[in-house]
Length: 294
Image 1 (cartoon, rainbow, N blue to C red):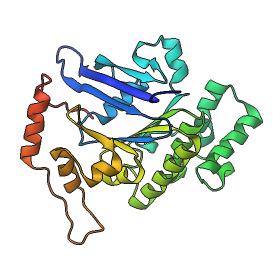
Image 2: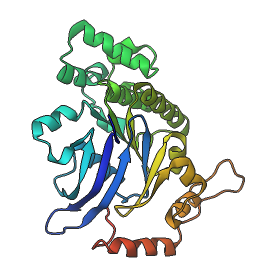
Image 3: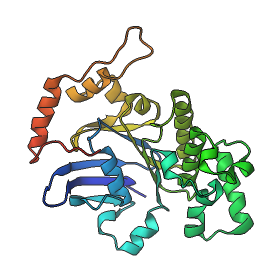
């Protein structure tokens, strides 16, 4: 395939009438096959809104009012429902933020892990069970046979997140939307999960859109980066380049606001009001104030 795996072109979204409040303001970005592309910004920047737009799971209160989302050459916003259903969950998958709410507490791990394989691949019986064991082994879960029989509350948070990662990769998708998948984890488990996602996506050649507010996470896993504010793209480029020499004042302010544990005396520096005031004025050029939806 030539060209990017995912190409978002001028995507705009807003709350439906009567408010008509903009949430995304002509967002454009692309994701190559086999790369991790980070979406970073404060709460309300529009990161999760972009991910949900790609997945076709925006709340009914939000409507797309402009732009295109091309995946493998097809515009997801203009596909017939049957073709869209065939793509979503199969070629495009999701790693959600909170594994405790994403997993059904009344169903065993094995049943939930294999939902996609049953629905999309028609797998049953011994073949399905063997695949489930293989998936848990891939995400380094010990005693997979026993874990498949357990309920979500019977395993740790880190293990639950690994289950969701295994489920996302179970159908070997071309693209995964990872919506802040380490937010609910402690620092040690977070590092393990980031390494796991990176290893899995490299092994499968999967493109990943990684939604986060944490530039420390971005530095560990993302190849390229889009910085957002108020539903608007502020800066884009190679992660190493942006982190080493950010071009925009807002990106520099975000970096300064990130505590550095490797530097003695490093603390949290608030984003200067002048920076946010300038961005608010720029966002207003699109018609309204920054959105309160991330």
